[in-house]
Length: 84
Image (cartoon, rainbow, N blue to C red; front, side, top):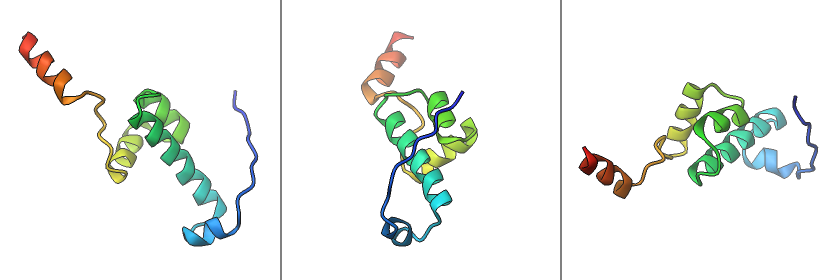
């Protein structure tokens, strides 16, 4: 099941980004999913689904946005290593 949302954007948004409305919508979905993943609000799998991408494609999108695909802090990683 899916839900369709409608909202208004100024036409200047498309020209400023030099993109079509469809490409803008796709990039907006990806940007939102990347940000929510970065904030640890959603999982990587859910973010990929929201973005309309495969998991591999979403990981590529994370790289484009300079967001790590790993949701582990340095401290957590050190603690994990020290447990072994």
